[in-house]
Image (cartoon, rainbow, N blue to C red):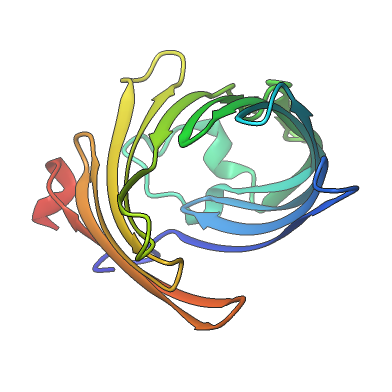
Length: 229
């Protein structure tokens, strides 16, 4: 909020377990607009749960899908108006494949995860027909690692506290990390706080309306360089 043409994202996800919860299936649909970029896409996901013993198991996951990306230089605000790409005169659409791979380890209350979104690292090429001007947009690989542990403050009352850490690495950009702490009561109510490195602190809360229906809300307080806006 507070920005003209602020980024917008709409996402729908559906997932569940089959075959005695050994196999997970999922569907994701995304529509995103950021400045001169607009992306629409979807992917299907598959995971397999391999039991090691009664307390531990491994999770392997893959997803594959397509992304349709539009690049519209007519919406650009530029310092150099001699840039030839500004004279393309319209939007260009390109469709490419996308995929993600991940691995998880669960041992009692401990969960360790590693994943690589945009694992294919595809390059989307754009060419202007009349001037043969070329540009490209790369789906850079991301490397994510997470660590989570659930402590029970009272097993009898179902009260638990869960710290979680996430590290995100993208080549040629600063490493980012998140720290999160959630307090949960019997999966019926939760409240938590998050720190996002060089960006924001956040609070969140949620409640179970009726068995399997949950409603949650989160709010970010920006503390980085963009916070003054």
